[in-house]
Length: 175
Image 1 (cartoon, helix red, strand yellow):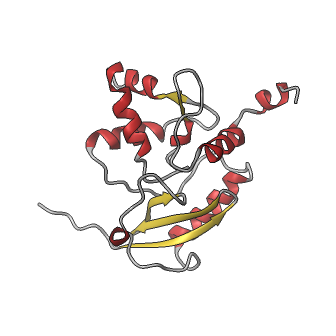
Image 2: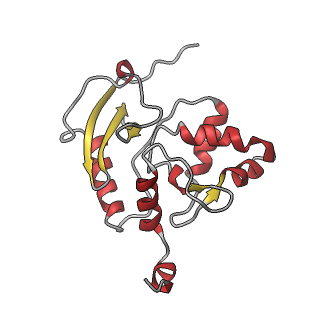
């Protein structure tokens, strides 16, 4: 049995992190991509370009992103939809459970899945996350706590993690 996906459409959302390509499918956000994203969607997979205003998915995404980037929001309510393989979907679902202000590692996710040997495969799925920020792949760091690859660039990853830093950590800094 074949299921038909609702038609897609796309727009550009302007944020403090730069312009983001937003892709909607029906009433859900299906993609949020930075410029020069590692794994951008194919041009024929994003549908026609529409205005970011007058479209509830894009208006809500823009509003929630702006609130998040101002430090006023820690969770997102915009419905999302992804179409990865079963393992990728499992990884993305796991990422969605990570609390604001926390980080994890590829190895920790693999251990959570019951197989530490899956760390590289987890990394591949994290790198192909189609919905940046809302599915918080920026919260995954290297085993030693270092910043590792991010489809939006390490500078953006650092900004997102700094934005989410708990107040007690910020206040404990000398500089």
